[in-house]
Picture: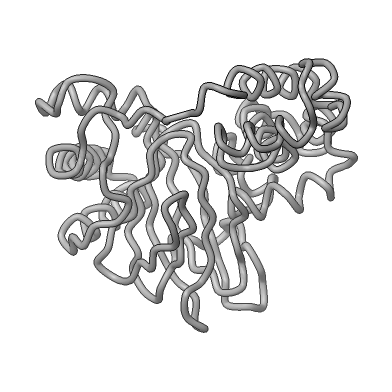
Length: 286
């Protein structure tokens, strides 16, 4: 596993390792290859898509529709903004190769490959496709070996395969009319006041509703309570800062965490690697 030497180690001493990075020749894509045993991902969501091939062990993915178990040869497909969690499904944990394509990259491949019109969305959350799983692993291999022709060819091939076989128009979230507008306004407030967020009661007062009604509406709209969503949003914003070269300590304060250890704890749980390793995977050594 020479390709991951020097990469961020999620938990030294437990047999866990992870590398989360970008290959300059594959714009619009994040790459994660990892083996996790004790690590658990709390409920969170992504701006873009997730296409993950489990290579060994079993991953348990918590989705709005229930818990899925993914083993070798399976491919996990998650659309943007879908809340999910993950953990090991067997004592030895799980290993996987994951692609995080942006919305723009998916739209480009969809248009070029003749996928259904409209914003693409995957219908199944999990498919058994050993060939696609191998292709995903080979995208990583090509990138790690510095072979842009192979990596890009395989990337577009596997994305087109998934779109043609498993995609349609992105499903629209069905939201009860009552409270939906309050939930969206609450999100706007939390995003604007990320460093000094109001309490749930204060937020409800500002919006002219009651705390429990707002909590229920927010869960229905975003799949998680406001405080969990805020932590996820802070980590997302921290990722953008780290990608721009901001030191982790500065990024922590800029998004509302009390200090760098506070950022480290939540960032590592949600992203799978510490902030420093994530930054090095994009900007080179600090």
